[in-house]
Image (tube, rainbow, N blue to C red; front, side):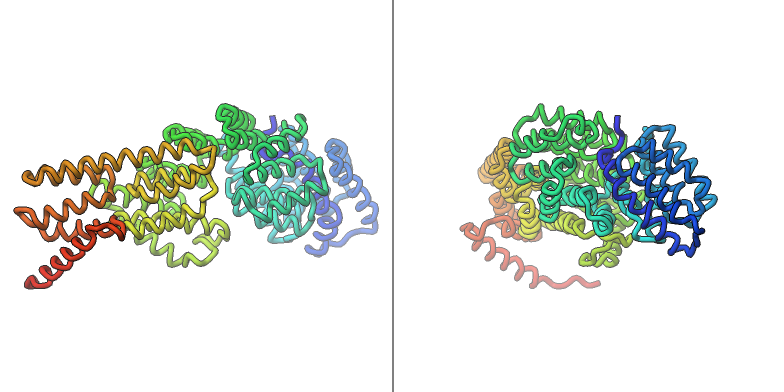
Length: 601
């Protein structure tokens, strides 16, 4: 079984990495480090070129033998680097171990050769894909990242270092950080492999990325038999609302090549889901997980499937399963926290955000998430958690450092398209704060902005609808569900959401009528109005009832009347006939308050 989600790329990566191991690396390194060569250089170069040729043709055993024959005469370390790569590409555990031994020898003799360092990064990456332990996997990935960065610092034109760094970032589920090295790889060698890797990363960030679509169109035209490009084309077709065409494109990939592509089943699951074939989607996602349990996408898509179906508990359970295997995948943990928050599972969300902050105290997304949790708890419990002020102070410090408009996070890493996600989380946090302060209209504007950004994304619409519903903002939930109703794959779920809103509003209306009928028993009437607001936290008639009873009742309470008048004006439409009465009453309350003598300090 191939352990890596990118095994199908490795054979082709040989064609590009060889540019480094021959002329660019062999001669470039000598110029970089100031090394001199003997008169035997042409013969050595020719022998290296022959070894590289074997590598190009995926004849790894012959490449291994050729590089091994050059070790005695190698006074640069490039043959050692080539041998290590040839061994690692055979994906046999014993040979990967030998590749590490060869690299140890090379590092002792040629510690400053960036080719050797880059080869070490590649071997570490390959090894990371063969270990079962998540902890060891993360250590190998971290080592690969550090080695590639060292090699790139010494010579940015080392192609295999750029490629490997991108693959490492993909394996770490840090797709945005993979874009830059893949883009540099394309600049060094514009070939189907590098172009497809770049397009794959771009599509993971934005499923409708236009640049990725243009890249894949070009690659498929130039190399129609390249399976990875065909799979990316299927993804593009599926995201463009053409699941039947996507299905045909995906199944045109030969069966023998599918075995080298664990992601093939994830894409199949997405297509089946789009076609309304739930059992087919589930089977495909589970097969993808069986083939490579370290891939985060199948778990994430499986969770999305259950969330769209309305089974939030199952969605969260699958995310938890993923984190058992990928405990250091902070992006996955953030996704789980976001899902839990939208499903109103505050304890789960809080636990995950705190776990992230324990290792990354300056993670702005996690801090924003915690503020949303605190605001939600404040609305439920009537008071903020004790650590809320500390979280807000920390977030303010981060925000001033981040300056929001900057494209860098506190670690100095470029966010770029991640800034869009951060902006959305910030808007959702502002919505939570506004709701806690009963600024319903401000909250609605925040929700509306985010919902509009995802008007063609079924999972996001259903998820945002759930969050708005759980927050008691039924108008925003209606907006999300109304858009989702136009998308066949989630239309039934959207209808269910709309039905729940109608049920809650009917209950709010019933309780309000009971409150209106029991004015002679003020305590009972107030309780009915409050029950109405539990059913619909923005039901204007209930706020009007409370305003009236606190204004006109036997025991007026101006402060409570004022509070409920403000809430009514926030919740009621501009055309509501009761607005003028409430506005007039509010004005009288303000005059009454202004006429009170000020308390002496």
